[in-house]
Length: 423
Image (cartoon, rainbow, N blue to C red; front, side):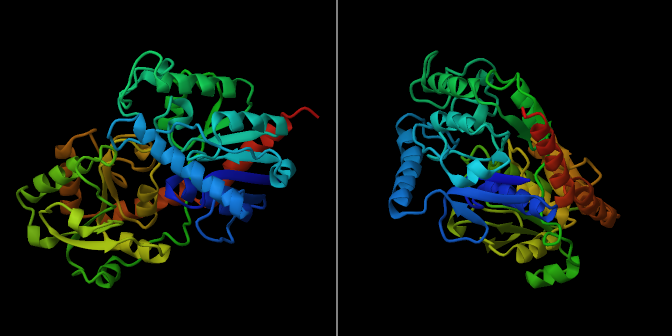
């Protein structure tokens, strides 16, 4: 079985990473799987690209930059991603697509497959699968919806646009997508139950069949290390209670919920029985320490970590991984942490509850409640059998998200789609 995965970039962001992980899992399970991307930032043995020649690269760069910056003319100064999808390119003459048995789409924004060029894929007459790594495929432009429910109808009155109304840019984009999808036969994969439920109540996709198949992770790389030794590696006293979090942008970044996490840390530090000197905060992925706010505990900044084995040791050094994300499909950081036997404390949102089981391998806090996040930290701080919670975190990943498990589910879906093809 020949499977080709399409993604805008190689390994960039959660979608790119998930795409590469699935590709590796499928190949390990006996399929002939490859990833082809719109643009490569550097040569790679893992993927091939549609933009090979100098002219193709130049056009790709133009499209990517146009999509990223022209949108600023129409969207309010908010940190919620929005795509115009005006720019794109045709790929239907590519030999790899013609020779594939299955075409599997992933994240195709930033000037890659606009609705016009997406619709052309129907000419290839191949079974198509599309994994929704965010909400953009079924909205009029946004990637993160929050409380907005306009996608239940036909978008319009978009809260992100400078000029909003019944026939605004989001509604017109919705109409373009509707036209493109009308003759395009594809099967939807949602990595989380939350995403699947969102698809089912959307006006664009509600009638289509959806399979919930999670992303996977390299369980041989993201694995537990001895906590005391991992802490020593980071020059942290082994007896300290270590809280870890990913990159914290400014307080105004709505998506990451940074303000809630900062408030929760402050509340936790003031709880009776919490000895501040025994707690240390570790942050990885931060771009600039100068952007960081004041923290109530000693804080270690690890910077960007590009080596996965080292990242796994960092996760292993933590007693808890914290995320205050307000909307996330199936965040890689949560899966990585659990794979390293580190419990996760997070809000009940998106696909996080698919991975984090309350009081079993972590703590699920009430949505947008800094008090509840602090409760999760306090619970784990005082917990005597942390080792049992840690073991359960690892077990969850091995039984539900391991490469062989996820590959098998995809292969079963592919086979069913091939069997349904007219002969």
